[in-house]
Length: 141
Image (cartoon, rainbow, N blue to C red; front, side, top):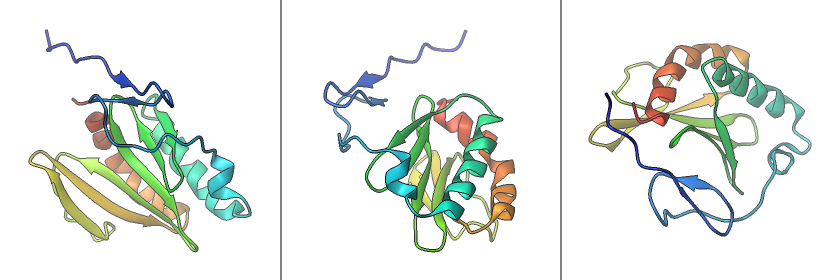
């Protein structure tokens, strides 16, 4: 039987959930409209990425002033809206040598952050094969 994972800590101010008590975050209340107002193309790309994640399993969106994060037990994918693209990252257990990723940074000894851009729906298709592994990181598997 796998070890039981500790419960998530809930911020008493904003209600967001975290893997550790008192983790740094902003408590502001933001919406998707804040990020996509006047940017229908960006919203369509975001929806395609969100739909690809929904095919894998349930996630929770955490919306802050500067980014939108997807989490299960922990945050594993992030989207920031830029002028001409979505700047995204996913967390994976291993470094991946794929030119699609614009930068890969070792986040912890067992985790790598892989950054990428979504400029069209083909970019969502390119990242889709990596999303199940990122989802597993979010589940702390």
